[in-house]
Image (cartoon, rainbow, N blue to C red; front, top):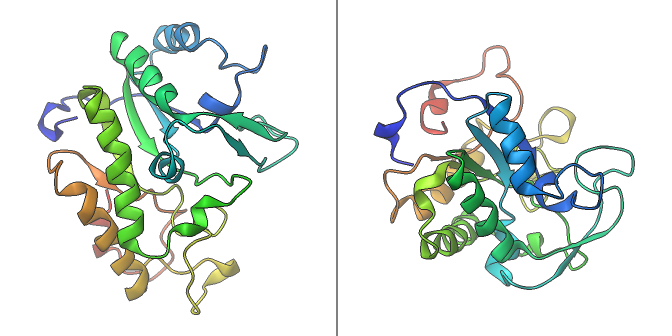
Length: 223
């Protein structure tokens, strides 16, 4: 979405990875058209979902077996589940477009049976998998429906970014997002998908609140 086209606040629902993983009868997302119609009726303008960029970059049409994050939760599936990200992602975005619902893309970097997410070794790797993902959306002519891209949910929490390895861990094992190596990861990763799409908002969804005394100046370019 062009930054200049955003003229009013949006009500955004978070459908995380549930949009693709909770599709059995009664799970809530088995009929995308129906649930999107209901979303509009409740006054929402946009949804934020997992685009599974690591899986798309590896093989967009492959059937992947995903391992559950939790076994008692209404986020995602409580049991191993099989998904095929494309063309499902484009189908979903297309249904959103028909209803005037914008789509914000993120990733929780879900673990598959081969743990493909651990192939991410550098910020360049992270940027490239997102570039490939956006290319598959652009090829379908759906980029106008994309509201923003945040490259990782709750960055840099290890649960969602296990590929990020730094010796200087912070509180509760979470590296500080203000430390220079983390900030460099962010800047370098953002620069890659941002080059062909300079009008698209590309960012990180950072974890939690800023800590007391923490330098906040860098936040201006992460959102």
